[in-house]
Image 1: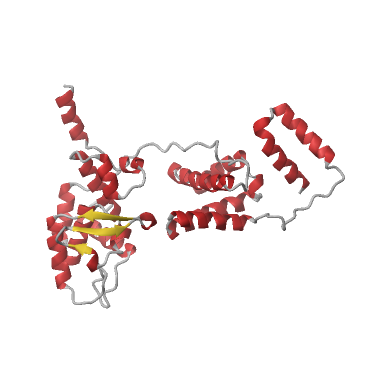
Image 2: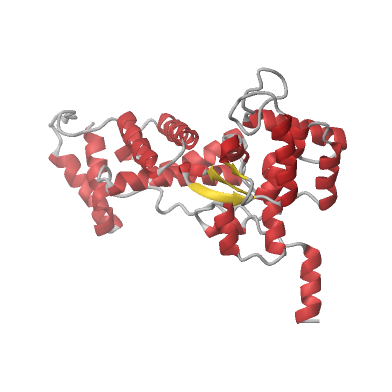
Length: 327
């Protein structure tokens, strides 16, 4: 406990001392405290690590983070604390660097995963600093992990038509059209009810990440196929999309993912999943000249950097633009 106190004092003085002065301070403190017993007084405002994590999660919940994100935050932070076996105030930059390095080696994790962990830990320690639980975040000097740019696949026009033509159920056809024309997240679509659809304006209100409300739009083909599907239903479930078998309960994200995966396997299409529709719409919108700010609003992104990740311009159009403006 005595060494922990010395370390805490020295860390607090690091911004004001050089290396020689820091070493001298450690010697002075060790000499001054020699012969004394140091005990932690839990009655004077000290908070346990678990309570600090709970307080941080409460703050993030107020900011609008989803429960899914909060669980990910909690598991990530607790895994770090469990691995380091240190009090929060004693954790330094080298501890975090070592933890991330060992985690990547042990789990064989991608750079994206490691940067996600770094980002969550940075958020946690920055909050502790802002709330005066620690003097300085140990993650401040750990920079963003360079992950590179991977051009992710989108659906071709032929693949979309092939999926539509293969549908034997009105529901599946309406579902594919809804995903491809609105660009909504699959998690947003499964929450939709019949009454949420405005057929006159060809629009509906969805609740995105953090329960943020926004309007999305669909085309005339989607309107017709969606109306045909709803007219064919005999159940009274309020959900927009339900299971084919009785009791026709609301479709889950997993149910849609499995259905699309089966369809892709049957048609010989590579990596058919809901999010690919969203990426396809974004790429097509950028390709046709939609302003990035409008696409950001349509997709419900908080930061425009996120939208730019979807903007995969087709190489054929780069060639045409080169001939137009340069060649």
